[in-house]
Amino acid sequence: MRTNIVFTLTGPDRVGIVEAVTGMLLEHGGNVEASRMTRLGGEFAMLVLVSLPPGRLADLERAIEKLTGQGYKVTTSRTEPRQAETPPGWLPYQIEVEGADHEGIVHEVARYLSERGINIESMETGVTPAPLSGTPLFTMTAMVAVPPALADQKWQADLEGVGNRLNVEITVSPVP
View 1 (tube, rainbow, N blue to C red):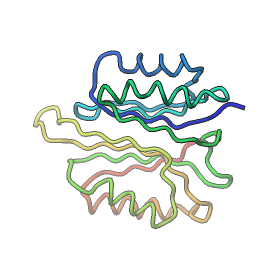
View 2 (cartoon, rainbow, N blue to C red):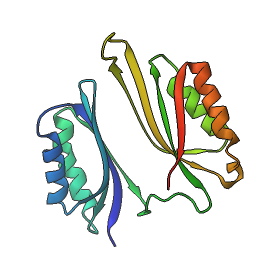
View 3 (cartoon, rainbow, N blue to C red):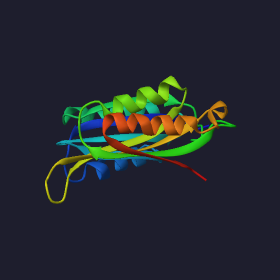
């Protein structure tokens, strides 16, 4: 049975870092099952689910020392090989947020969802300059799982009210 790990790396962005890391994983029999990779400021971040042949984790951890010597922070955590599935009976939704950037948007939306028992399964955020004015515009896309007890959709209207208070537009769409 293969060993599954969550592999994280953060450090200076440079050309070839993805090739170097995935090559190292492959050299130790690792298979990338799922990943998220992005540059944040001048740093590069990787979050990767890797499956390894039995007994290869110790060898991989020794190889990681080369990356830490180059200024990268790396962690590995064992995990169970579960598929990313919405819990039975829970309803998948996509939430999109757009508007002028300001502090607290992510926190307020996350708090609203958390207080209702809605699970955030993935989230991406970003800030880009508006085409004409250059004003920072915030965008967020989140995939959430909503408990069956909230199927009445009142939570959606209330979340849009949070958007009004934050002066951002929030759109909620069911995922087929």
